[in-house]
Image (cartoon, rainbow, N blue to C red; front, side, top):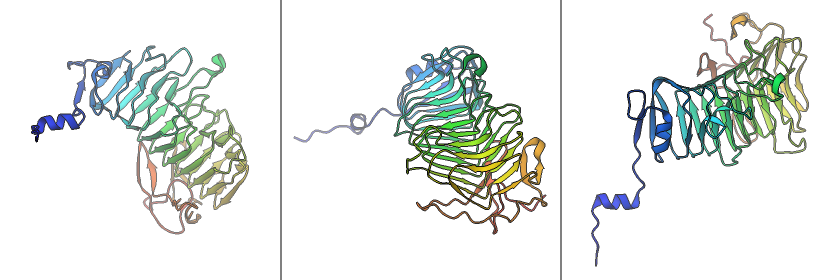
Length: 383
């Protein structure tokens, strides 16, 4: 006998529950993000009205969530509260997107209080701001996880090292599979690192990573080595920066591991310390450094094993306004037309920069011509 099942019931039997959109705000039924976290289902979108949410913390266990500020950024001010003693938000679900949210004030007893503690797989963060926490983002070490952060700002996430003997970082990515950071403004991680990642693959593309009023340790720390592509970034160490080195690579990993590749291409690094090192490569594998503009008190461009081509190390880069960190090139800059096509990696990945960082939190297409200009910016002919 053939059994007839009405279409709607067939859909309910074969498909998961349809996703919903939940609205959060002072004038809504759901007043706080934590109210939505308790009832959301897999696949839901949570829209959080712009405004301040003081002391509200949440655990997100659901998968395929989109958590979004609407009408402006939703500002989550932890004010000493935390979820699980870890963070303002502890995200345990997979495939989560966080957009247009501001996180501040996360502090916990173990000094790792983060805006977000991510424990799932696959996280995307866009147009967010993390500041004045002990850690900005802190993630687990799932080897199947990928994390993308774009168009976001991180600053002043720190721990009082002299008092506690521990460091807080703007970004701390665990030993995941793939980490991408692009079009972001990362600055002033006091005593800690601006970007620290143990990911197997790291793509740091077209960011501004700078000490401006603060004094971090490394600008970029990749202690596990792995594959790293650092392309088109604006980097600056302040006079008070705690470490000579801007980029540290494979400092805590086996030097003899052959599966390590570091490419630093078309970055602009300004060192305003008394002395500085652009890259310290702790691995035996060669680092590749091409078309980098190195300005200021730099004593070593590449410490450790590596190959260098068409880097320019000078005292003054010919910038629009060095005092305000505007490192676009003037017509008189010695970096114009001094570079070379960086070519491809052995795996066929192009190293030639396609964009440059545009402040704040954006990018624009880089002018393409040969010979290529050295550094993060191509002279656009308009100044």
